[in-house]
Amino acid sequence: MLKTRIAKLSLFFWKNQDSEVIHATLQKYSAYFRMLGPSDQKRFIYRVALFSRSMKFKALGDHAINSQMRYLIASGLVQITFGLNTFTFHHFRKILVTPRAYGYRGFKDKLLGHVDYSNRLITLSWANSTHGFEVEDDAHNAVLHEMAHALEFEYRKWLKKLYNYRHKGGILNLIISVTLPKRYMFFDEANYRTWLDIARTEMHVMKMERDYFLKDYAAKNIHEYFACAVEAFFEKPKAMKAAIPQVYLVLGKLLNQDPIDHNKPRLN
Ligand SMILES: [Zn+2]
Image (cartoon, rainbow, N blue to C red):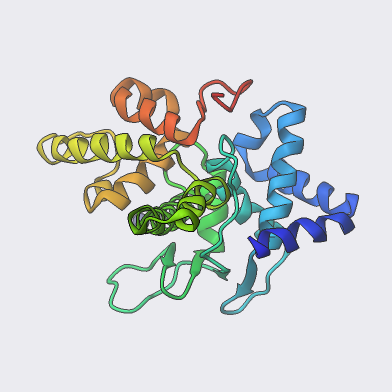
C-alpha cells in the first residue's frame, strides 16, 4: 500500500511530457490501447504511469532501461486489470528486462520471461515483449503471460492471508478480513472459485481433445492454463468465445472485461 501511495504522490510532479511518451509508446505497440475511446485512453495512461512508478526496473545484459520499456511492460498489467479497481502489485517489486530470450537454470529452451515469486521479481525479454504486442492476434504475448502469472500468484497470497484472518476470529481479524480485499485483492473471491472449477474441467477436456483451442502449454498446470487463457482472451477474443465460450465468459467475469466490445471495456 505504501508503494502505491508513494507512486501516487510522485504523480503530482507528473509532466505532460511523460503522458505524451506513454501515449506514443502505446499508440505504436498496443492494439488494445488504440481501440479505446479518449476517456478510457486517459485512464489507461494514468494507470500505466502509476504502475510503472510503483515498480523498480532493472536492465540485465547489454542494454539499458528506457521509457518505452517501462511503459509497454507496465501496459500488460494495466490491460489485464483494466476492468478491476486494484491494478498495482504489493508482493512483486522489481521487473528485470533482458535484451532477448535468455537461458535460465535447468530449462532446456530459452525463456521469454518468468516470474520469481520468492524473490518478488518478474523477468521479461524486451525483444519478445515488443514482438508479442506487434503480432497482436496470435495469442502469444510474453508480457500478458507473465503479468497474468504474477497477478494470480499475488492474488493467491492475499487469499491465503484472508482465510487465515477469517479463521483466527476476533474483532481485529474480522476488520482486516473485510478491508483486505478492497485494498489488495484483484479478483472477486466467488468469481475466482468459479474460474478454478471451469479451468479444472477444461484441462481434462484438453487432455482428450487433439485440437483444443488454447496452446498445448496450457495443459501443464492450472496456472499455465490461466496465463495462456489470458493471452487468447485479449488476442483472439472472438475465436475464443466461439471455441470455448464458458472459459471466455468466466474469464470476462473475473477480469470484468469483454475485449470484443471496445467501446465499453469494463463490464460494470
Ligand atoms: Zn507460464
